[in-house]
Length: 68
Image (cartoon, rainbow, N blue to C red; front, side, top):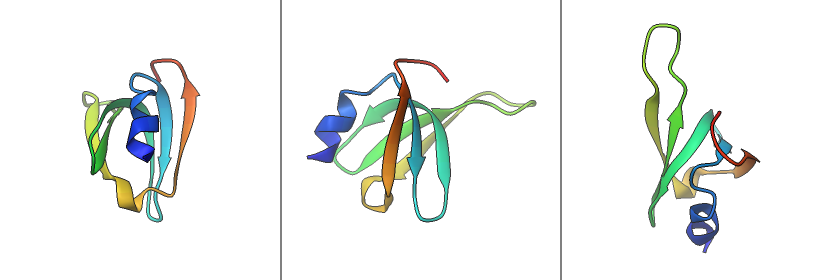
């Protein structure tokens, strides 16, 4: 299953593409229905955790072996 493959990339920098959005950050967690990506904070705020439902993901690009 795709979640098993994604679990092997926890801690890696990723780009997650959905039909409506692009999420860039560090893959933190993978469940049977979602992934959690920590996105860098903007100039005024801390990093944010973004939950993305697996069924809406078009593709995931793995960028590096850790950190953004």
